Amino acid sequence: MAENFDPIREARRQWEAHGYAGAADGMTLTTSIMRSQQLLMARIDRALRPLKLTFARYELLTLLRFSSHGELPMSVVSRRLQVHPTSTTNAVDRLERVGLVKRTPHPDDGRSTIVQLTKAGRELSLAATDALNREVFTHPGIEGERMDQLLQLLAEHRAALAED
Image 1 (spheres, rainbow, N blue to C red):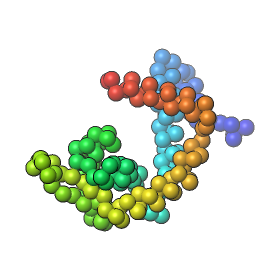
Image 2 (image 1 turned 180 degrees about the vertical axis):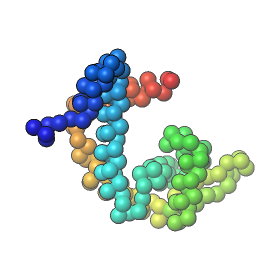
Image 3 (image 1 turned 120 degrees about the horizontal axis):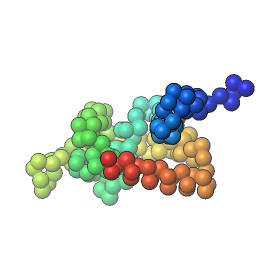
Image 4 (image 1 turned 90 degrees about the vertical axis):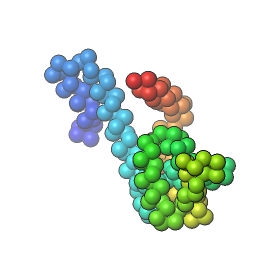
């Protein structure tokens, strides 16, 4: 019956057996979400690897592609991607180095920088979206009403964590 062994369920059993029953639900939830994230990231990485793109850089390119003019201030990119400005700067540095984005001064705010998607960046974002849709997003492992329920629960969970 080894094929039915669930290491997270066993971790929960051990947590309870060692006197941590009050935290067992939270440990199980946290570990389950983390493991799901690892499994999804492995699928995403496999889809993007042939394009030499990370998911973080894909998100940045696609955010720009979805913007009305293919460009956004760096501060807006950070907020929308929910990452630290330093992470945005590092991603933009790498994307700019390979010609996928370019930076220009903000026309109205000398302290701000605009990130613009290049034609090559737009094409790569489209190719990556096709790969992710085909290999990951159309088969996420759960469907229909169960997906809707999970999405609602995860939205509530993210909101609760954001309050901390």
